Amino acid sequence: MRAKDVVVVLDCGSQYTQLIARRIRELKVYSEILPWDASLEEIRSKNPKGIIISGSPKSILLPGSPMISKELLELGIPVLGICYGMQLLSHILGGQVGRVGLAEYGRACIEIQGEGEGLFKGLPKQFNVWMSHGDTVVKLPPKARVLAKSEGGLIAAMAVEGKQIFGLQFHPEVVHTEHGVEILKNFVFDICQCEPSWNLGDWVDEQIKEIARTVGDGKVISAVSGGVDSTVAAVLTKRAIGDNLHCVFVNNGLLRLNEPEGVLSVYRDKLDLNVHYVDASDKFLAALKGITDPEEKRKAVGRTFIEVFEEEAEKFGDAQWLLQGTLYPDVIESGHKGKGASVIKTHHNVGGLPEKMKFKLLEPLKDLFKDEVRAIGAILGVPRSILRRHPFPGPGLSVRCLGEVTREKLDLLRRADAIFIEELDLAGFYEKVWQAFCVLLPVRSVGVMGDERTYGYTIALRAVESLDGMTADWTYLNRELLDKVARRICNEVHGINRVVLDVTSKPPATIEWE
Ligand SMILES: Nc1ncnc2c1ncn2[C@@H]1O[C@H](COP(=O)(O)OP(=O)(O)OP(=O)(O)O)[C@@H](O)[C@H]1O
Ligand SMILES: O=c1[nH]c(=O)c2[nH+]cn([C@@H]3O[C@H](COP(=O)(O)O)[C@@H](O)[C@H]3O)c2[nH]1
Ligand SMILES: NC(=O)CC[C@H](N)C(=O)O
Ligand SMILES: [Mg+2]
Image (cartoon, rainbow, N blue to C red; front, side):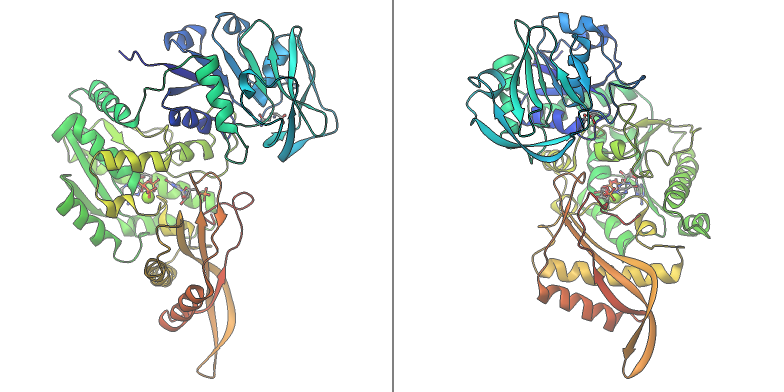
């Protein structure tokens, strides 16, 4: 068993929980997330050297909000509460949380009180942090003291004397917090005394063993899309169970130009994966007929995927397992993690699955972010042509073709998208952005082409930068490139007479339009 040090993160439903775990892993210390209501035995069984309690959309002032047992604070294991986590600690230990008429969202400047030892060791007296709270600790618990205050005079950090218990009202895990990594380092190394000895190679070895243990002699059917996530999941699982893995690639009629052929040739020529191809485009398009609501579209695609997989699975001697390349952001945004996160959109492979399904799900990447998965893919020898690919959602072009999805509109969108991506790659931007694509708007407008009036569709160009898909900013592509893309789309894709640019970040928008 693992002798390596572990930091347990108790998830109270924050959008950032996984970022906390990930930052700890970046410090080469293994971190595992448990739900806030994990039993004391379960937490102790991990033998953690430190415990972090995440933020939450809930308020400790209201009944039914996440709670932990007081005993957890008596194990002698250092505990750090972040945002809601600090409010929770304060509440349990006899302090008071309230609303003071001042909320702090976004950037705030904090000032360290006293010497700045412990969590704040080696840091400047004042720096900017990222806040996101409406509730505030208004009275410290007995024996606690203030470590830092915000500009507004609110308690930004606290520690309980004589106990290894700490609270931060701000989020050290987000990149916008200055010195966030140093604060986590101080916690993990100085306070918890962890050794930095974990790495992704270990993760790969452990996962291979874990998959082999879980699946035994069972058969696994793997849905592969040609994307990074499912391909890495399949290659990893192949290492664990060999020929008991059967891959299925589905043409759902919502793929990009020439994508089915391209994907199949990489799987055949470059990877030793035995891939079965199913053309189910008619079935998917029939399921989407008449649907305009984004959530309904996602659910229709999710349902149809499962129907197709179930039919295919029978061809492989009744596979019991379905392997998916689900990543952490898919799970969190569907509101499934941490019992209390908000539903942003139903990612087809999580919330879109039907209630009754005959498969057991195998999702080895579900705690990871995309860049971690790319690094694992490189360790496993997955070709660069796959690792460099932009993410492409399972519901495919259906969520980029606003309004009802029809073959005609898909055809316009496909051709426009291929032009955008081709030019982006030529201009050296493809690998600089997280994702870029066209969206076909259900809006028609008047144009003039060859002296003739046209009444055509509109294409929106979307290009964003992101680290993990959870937040994103729009990318400033140059005028020359945008101009060329817009001209080529109108000239070459008959039916489109207007191209517009999306300049919103996430939040407030999301990356995909639906
Ligand atoms: N066309 C498809 N055929 C078979 N399975 C698919 C298809 N599209 C999506 N899936 C399944 O749904 C999962 C989620 O899709 P998602 O787009 O998040 O991942 P991906 O395609 O593997 O990677 P990427 O995010 O890089 O596109 C995939 O990992 C795969 O298991
Ligand atoms: O597997 C997936 N199934 C889905 O249903 C899905 N919807 C969005 N995405 C991708 O997730 C990232 C964040 O997308 P949003 O900002 O649009 O929520 C972006 O990279 C999106 O492309 C999906 N991936
Ligand atoms: N980000 C958080 O953890 C917020 C905690 C709580 N919901 C508040 O608004 O204060
Ligand atoms: Mg994909």
